[in-house]
Length: 131
Image (cartoon, rainbow, N blue to C red):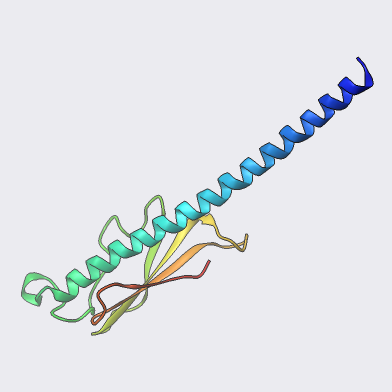
């Protein structure tokens, strides 16, 4: 083979290698974003369950305008997206949930993490993403 052909082969191998590395990085970034979105969606589901509990009368198994006594329903505490806990016990007016995902977050060392604060006066929970 001529020197020009060898140079073209080496150049082609380098370009393919760079394309593979870029593809892997894009896939990993997409997986983190998807996990973060799934954790937020699960926190929204928990928030809706907590609001349902808050509004339901105590005679029907609810909180009677209080978050005190709310527990995460079976099957919602852990799933393929992450693990969810009540980080601040329910008070009469608010409750805070924490969701920890399965993917490593933006800092490269800890998992995706978000919190949802559910208030008796707000229509939507307040979601804070910490990683």
